[in-house]
Image 1 (cartoon, protein in one colour):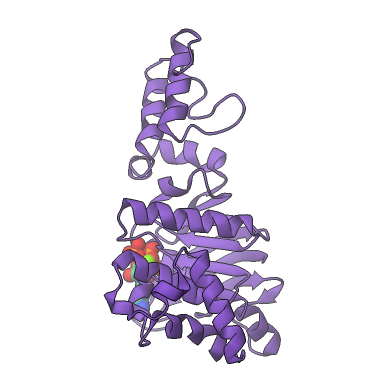
Image 2: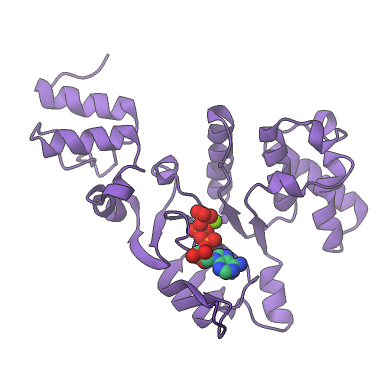
Length: 294
Ligand SMILES: Nc1ncnc2c1ncn2[C@@H]1O[C@H](COP(=O)(O)OP(=O)(O)OP(=O)(O)O)[C@@H](O)[C@H]1O
Ligand SMILES: [Mg+2]
């Protein structure tokens, strides 16, 4: 889906003494099928932006259109667009409520009015998409699954709605390394299928090789925005943001700053970023004299 955000602002408790400006002056565009990451420190407005995107909060100022429709609008057209947006809230596993995983995943399509048969087929498909075997995991009680499995089951519950735009708030928070990698692979797969994705994360480094765009927020305003080539140089010179870049990227930046001639920042001549240890080794060995890694 296409997202167009113009001069968007949001104030909590607008017009009261408690008023708190959470977002201001946000201009942003996401093309259909793109994968964007919204990043920024705590309190920068990430969750607020995702609630606005999902049509769950109305903008205080400016506009936010999804596929040309003001998303917080009334009426069946806006409602139709909102139904194509799936939201995975932070720690969604806390929202599993049914007696079995299958019942939980089936709930979404059923509540959208689909017949039981089709809802079950969709639920099975969604569980498979996140790598959970419907016949093994479907009958189980959600709270008896591991934390990582519960997170995946909750994501499946949203995928069963077959959203065209998927919004996820901190999808990898609190997961161990293998579970985090698994979830990132799932998002990469959904991206390949053409679903538009907006993932909120303060771990921007996890997404550098994965996402098309990065919207970096600070105190409710845009600090940097664009693809990795556009945002990494801005983040690299700002202490708080630089610390959030992966070790490999920080190493390459430090080597370059010290004059080791590893190239143009973290960018390989062919235009790709150096995001992995293997890519970094290759670049360092080349700088040392044309050798290549084993
Ligand atoms: N329900 C609310 N009422 C009043 N102020 C709020 C409310 N929710 C958030 N805020 C304020 O709005 C600002 C942005 O909050 P938001 O939750 O969007 O940040 P965030 O980037 O998601 O932070 P975190 O990384 O901690 O999740 C903060 O200053 C916060 O205190
Ligand atoms: Mg948040």
